[in-house]
Length: 307
Image (cartoon, rainbow, N blue to C red; front, side, top):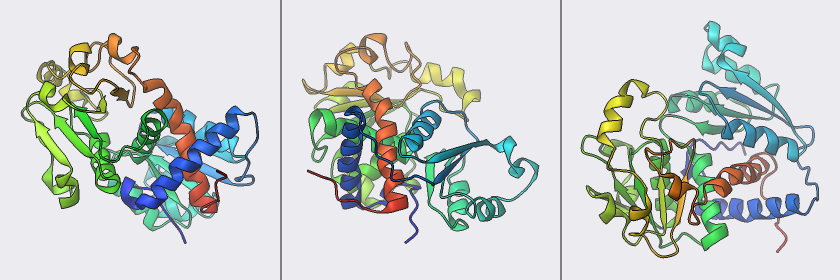
C-alpha cells in the first residue's frame, strides 16, 4: 500500500515506535562499521523551494548509506519554474523515481503532489508542519531520557510549523506541551484537533511554562517567509529567550533542543545551546538516522529489528 509522510500523524503510534526502534538499530549498525543497503537500486528525488542545510545533507547522506541514489532539484531546475503544474510534475517524477522529499512553503503543495504521485512523498518542511524534525527530536529524547510518554515539553516562542507538529506528536504519544509566546502570537485553534488541544497548556510567562518540563525547545523568532516582520519580532520576543535562568525552572535532568539554525543571543544563549543539557547536535545528527528508518519503512515496509 502506498504511504506518505506529510504530517506526523500519518503514522500510528505503533508505527512511530517501530521507526524509533529501527532508527536505533540502523544507527548502531553504522557505528559498528557494518553496511545496511536495503535501498540499492532505489532513487530519492528531493525538491527544494526553501533553503536547507540539515534536510538536504541528512536525506542525501542517509539515502546513500542505505545504498540508494539521490537527485536534488531546486524549483528552477524543473519545469514548475515555467508554469508546469504540481500535479503534472508529480505524475512525471513518480514514474522515474521511487520516493520524493519536498521542502516547500504551503502544505497544500505536498498534499497535491502526493495525491498525484505513484510513489511515497515525504514532507521535508512546510509552513504548517515539520514531521521529520519532530520524529528526530523525540527519538533523541528517547536515546537520552527514555520514553516521552507522560512528560512535559515546553515550547518557548513563536507557535510555528515545528510547534504544531509537536502537538500532533503529543496527541499520538501521550505527553503534554506547554507553550509560552508573546501577546499577538496565539495558537490557531482552527489548525488543532480536540485531542491536541487536550495536550496543550498556554502560559503568558515563559518561566511558569518551563516549571516541571523534561524538554525545553525553541526556534528562531522569525521563521522563513516572515522576514519582513523581523524587527517587530525581535522586540516582541526579547523576553522569550531560553537562558540559564529559564532552564533552572525545568526538571533537574531536563534537556534542551533546537531544530537549528540558531540565532545565538536571540532565542537561545550560548551558555544553553553549548551547555551540558543541550542535545542540539545529537538532534541534528539524528535527523539522518530517523529519516533512514522512515525511507526504509516507506519503500520496504516493516522489517523485524533484531533485539
